[in-house]
Length: 283
Ligand SMILES: Nc1ncnc2c1ncn2[C@@H]1O[C@H](COP(=O)(O)OP(=O)(O)O)[C@@H](O)[C@H]1O
Ligand SMILES: [Mg+2]
Image (tube, rainbow, N blue to C red; front, side, top):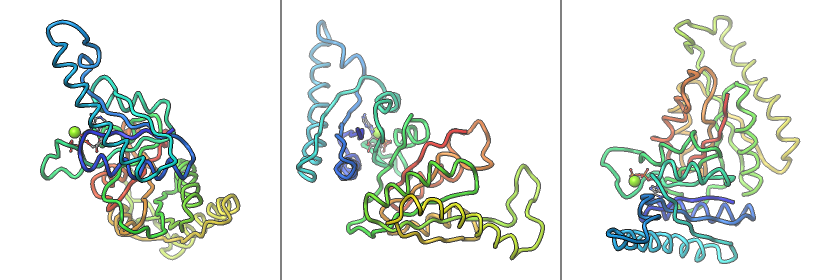
């Protein structure tokens, strides 16, 4: 099951459109959810019963718009709706326990000017118990390409798994982008002494070896390898322009253990040019 959060905003409906297409491709049901105050869900009698009922009706209207959109765009799809009690971030994370994917819009109703990603969207990516897709301006026409950013950590396997499966499902090409920085600074020390071209060749060789294994599992996916020098955020943003989806891990190499979300995934939440998949890559 795929879970998608709606809040009455246009971005939420865009998220439904994306999630419905994905559910149809995967052949799984879609659950459209909307979180409201717990007391509004639980209050049936007494002084505030009227207000609570009014809030539940509002929630039903928000859900109905989401369900409509999903049914209109994916007629064969099984779609259900559910009101969740509690604050949206926590409620979505709890609901995601039963989901294979959680989808939200990059913005919501309270769109604060200047913020590139809303607090709910930001709060679920990397924290939900499943992979999360944050939908920002789906391209009008499919580019037929998915972009995945990989580093050389052991966490890359889950990220590649998602990206290859997704490309396979959509019949899309997969652009695998590995950004490396020769002068990367780890813990305050400069690493990467040695021959410049040798370093680059060995990075390329490692990536190629990894990808050969994945291509054996997904023979119909055409892979474009790209090794870019520079900063991962700029390079990934550039590579993902116009792509159907950008896939990154929630954490990469060299992130502080305390961070749930790595610096690159954090930045991509703000700056990805289109839909972004944040794959859970726990330590
Ligand atoms: N109450 C809610 N119930 C379910 N999903 C929500 C709720 N609020 C937000 N979302 C989801 O999170 C996305 C981003 O909204 P949010 O982070 O709240 O942005 P903003 O701060 O702009 O309101 C929405 O498009 C929607 O998918
Ligand atoms: Mg909001």
